[in-house]
Image (cartoon, rainbow, N blue to C red):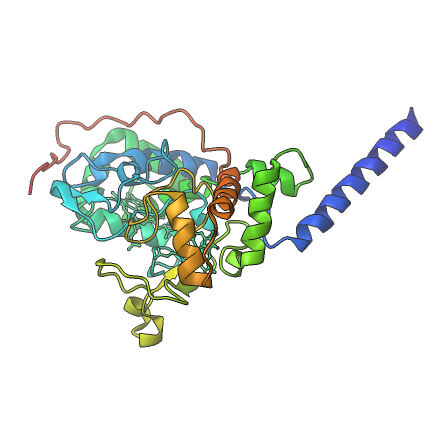
Length: 331
Ligand code: HEC
Ligand code: HEC
């Protein structure tokens, strides 16, 4: 019995170290779930993420534009905000966003906590103010009790609100995609076409920018490196943050995890399909015209990057009371 156990553990160790060395050679790594999460903050942050009372209209929540039933996006070209305003830019996914070096297409927020305060006050998004949002939360007994339990203080402020939302967002990692299973040694997890697509993805040079655990999110790169990208969208990218002309049209390389679900593509949402996005990337970033079958293979590979989507019970929000400030749906 003892020998048998020993042999099994030897075998397991050998199998793990083999796959570990295979992974080390790949430019793409399996995505790792977050560690050191504060579960009480996560539960509170989940409620806030789904709570439309953080908006002036009482109608728009974070989940309106980062719908967790749709890959953490809204699946429209550019987001719709307060008063049906058409937003200036495509909504990136919140899935795996904890892996980003910075937040937003131009990286203007350092991290998830800093980011979360923005949309509440953005007149084109939730159009509220931090003061109004806090007044609303502070008037709701269910929230006051929960903030007391989570933060040891019943005084709600924007710092605690964004802290809890960010903590929730850190849990939105999507592990166990078929491609990650393949990376971890399950050779049957992807088929021949998908594998051919991955090899092409590497050979063509896509991994120069889309690498690591999230296949993106780690650098800012020029859109239209070899040939210029034509768009009527006014976003200038990183240059808007650094003020440097050399940073014009540099955008944060988006993650390709769950990319099958996060259409339409690019900061302007102009590419409706993956086929189109891959064709444009080949031409503009690498000077390559993919054949129809090459394109099909790369798209097939990209679809193996869909991981396990966040799964939880829909949070039930504590009800407003008589004194809670009322929503202003219009204007
Ligand atoms: C009206 C639609 C809308 C609402 C509501 C909204 N967002 Fe966003 N979100 C966007 C758009 C559009 C961007 C990209 C803006 C940019 O890069 O300039 C974005 C960017 C982000 C990012 C950065 C992701 C990345 O890869 O850079 C995160 C994280 C995020 N939002 C979380 C939130 C949270 C949390 C809330 C609620 C407090 C929220 N959003 C509310 C539309 C929205
Ligand atoms: C030089 C860096 C670079 C290379 C090489 C590159 N990309 Fe990209 N990729 C980007 C940037 C930057 C964006 C965002 C551009 C934008 O939104 O304007 C992007 C966006 C994408 C998107 C859209 C994702 C989304 O959510 O909007 C896909 C799909 C994509 N790339 C696939 C590929 C493929 C496939 C290859 C190889 C053929 C490739 N990329 C090569 C930098 C690169």
